[in-house]
Length: 254
Image 1 (tube, rainbow, N blue to C red):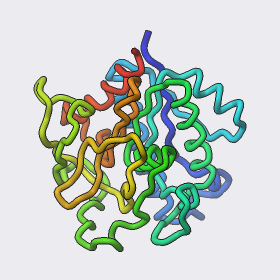
Image 2 (cartoon, rainbow, N blue to C red; image 1 turned 60 degrees about the vertical axis):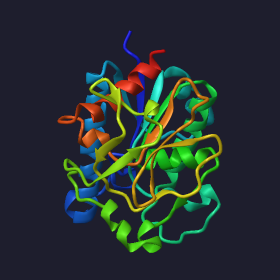
Image 3 (tube, rainbow, N blue to C red; image 1 turned 180 degrees about the vertical axis):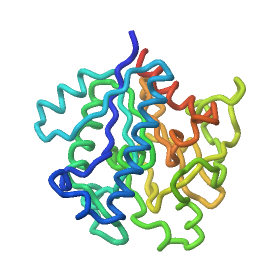
């Protein structure tokens, strides 16, 4: 049976559900379109890797969230808006647009998924949420820390490589040609990143300029893994990036 993977994303804004198209700003339209495309790519790569992808809608009821966590074999937490700073004990200081309803749902769902022993893969914001749930923090705006980090904000579509990452714990990354990679070429589109690593986690990949690009919880045998870049945008042409979705499906099927 194909493992069932819940995809926690935000392709649309519910707050604009009753708004006419002509009344929505170009920026909002472009953001919604980008997230819709990325969500579609993630679901497609889960399917081609042997899983069944189901896009999750936001829920508030704790019992419903518990039911979702129980039903699925694994979860993918996707990119999107900045995470509400209060979730990691800070006030806004460089954060941009946030989505409190999504934050609340995904925070609760990720905790429940872990408690029930489910596989979790986080992409970009999803990795940051994973780190926060387990007690870590994030930089609210990496550009205010080091202006050279603007490199990490590549344009959409993210089909080109922006920089490379060093593989520090390659056993938590896909193999290249059947062997563990020492480095990976990746894309990049973020202005936030992990600051303090959550207890128990290890850094699986990092950049030469000092940013954490990948994390994992080694003691968790069902797979709790995150990456800061967007493998879904590279996976059509890069088999190693596609293999992140294969890893998700394989972990979830154990």
